[in-house]
Image 1 (cartoon, rainbow, N blue to C red):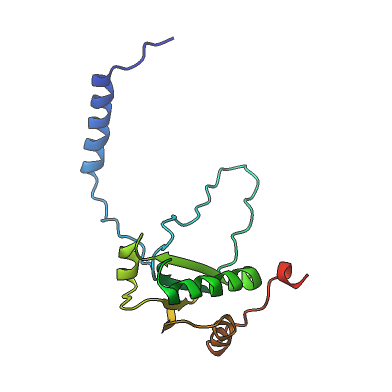
Image 2 (cartoon, rainbow, N blue to C red; image 1 turned 120 degrees about the vertical axis):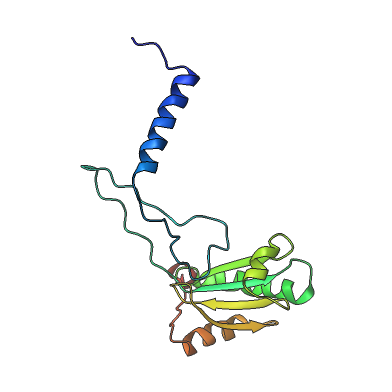
Length: 161
């Protein structure tokens, strides 16, 4: 069995690899454009493909997204938490519902240009902002607004039974 490489040997290998990379004129890497960015801090799902491996499960369907920006302490924000719980219980299969607590994540609120809370932002499945509302909005009005925007949001199968 060969002896393990020392730290100096690993550094020499890394220097050779870096030198080889610097000699090639590669185009600069550009970040892929994003419509909004992940508000939940989670990276996008990535599938790794191994030759000869069975096919991966199908990618989940992109859903329209309802984002409420507020806190857990202001009275109108607390009302919106109840509205979001109702939406989650009724429409989770057809609508992605997110809450951004701006006390915990002020950068997300800034990124979304929130000036007053609670603010709700409606995003297309592709991440494009479609509409926003400031204040309290009832669950039935959220669903009506989605219909006005061209999205038929139906109750989830689990909420029907």
